[in-house]
Image 1: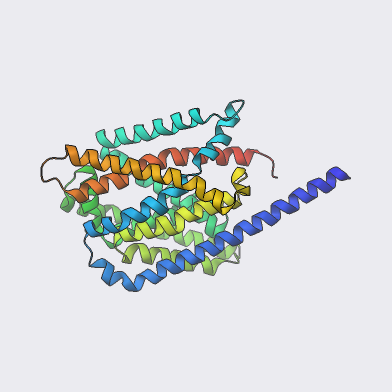
Image 2: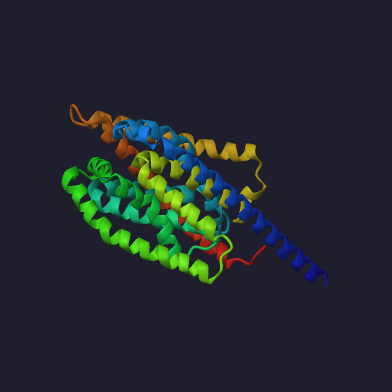
Amino acid sequence: MSSTFSKNHAIGWASHRNLASHTLRATHLRIGLICLLGLLPASGLLGSLDVSSQLAICVLPIALLGIMHGAVDPWVGDIVVGRHLERPDRRVFFLAYLTLMILVVVAWIFASLFTLTAFLALSVWHFGEQDAFGFEGRSDPLSIFVYGAIPVLGPIVGHPNEVAMIFDWLVGIDRDPLAGVLRWLLQPLIAIWFVGLGMLLSRSLIERSANIGFHVFGIAVLASAMIVLPPLIAFTAYFCLLHSFGHLIGLATHRRGPWQSWSLDQWAARVWPATAGAVVLGLAGWLILTEFAPAGGAEPANLARIIFCGLAALTVPHVVLHCLHQRFDQRSPAL
C-alpha cells in the first residue's frame, strides 16, 4: 500500500510539474511574441540601418543573452557522461565539447559554404524542435520543419540582398549572383513550407486542438517579424528573446537534473562564467582576424564571421549534448 501511495504521489507530482512547465513556457512565448510584435512598427526606422550597423547593434545582445542558454551544458554533460562512466568527469566533457568546436571552426575555414549550409539546416531542426514543443507540446518532423524554417527562411524572403551580403562575407561568394540563387531556391522551399503549414493546421483542426488560435497567432507573428524586420535584428530578437530564454525555462522546469533546485542566484552564478568565456573567445577571434586580415579589410565582414562561426562552433556540441540527454531522459522512468 505504501508503495502504491508513493507511486501515485510521484505520478501526481510529475503531472503538477509538467503543468507548471507548460504554463511557464506558454507565458514566456506570449511575452516573446508581444516583444516581436512591438518591434514591427519600428521596422521602417530599423530598416534604414545598413548591415554593418545591424551587426554592431546585435553583437552585444547575442553575446550576453543568446549564448548564455548553453552555460548549463557542463551540468547536462555530468548526466550524459555519467551514463557511460562510473561517475561524471568534467575533463571528458570539456575535451569532447572543445574538440567538436575546433572541428566546426576548421570546417568553416576549409569548407565554408558546406559548413554554412549544414549550420542553417541544423538551425532549422534545433529551433523547430524547441518551438514546436513550446507551441504544441510535441516535436514531430512536420512541426519541427514548419516552426524551424521561419527564423531561417524568413529573413531571406524579406531581405535577400542583405542576406546575400552577409553570406558573401561568410563564404566569399559575390552577393549579386548569390541573391539570385537564394531567390531561386526560395520558391520550392516556400511552396513546401505552405504545404507543411496547411497539414499542420489541418491536423490541429482534426484533433480539435484547444490552442489552435495561439498556434496561428504565434506563426503569424514569427513569420511577420522575420520577414519585415531587418535580417540581423529579426534573428537577434528571436534568438535572444524566444530561443535562449525558452531553452533555459525548458531545462529548469521539464528535464530532471540538479538545476531544478537552483535559486536565481545559483543560476546567475553558473551562467555568467560561460557567457564571459564566450565573449573572451570572440574578442580573441576578432583580434586574430584583424591582425591577419589584408590591409583595408572589411571590419563588418570580420565581425560577421566571428558571430556566425562562433555560433556554429557552439551550436554543434550543444545540440549533440542535448540530443543525448533527451534520449537518456526518455529511456528513464518518470519521476
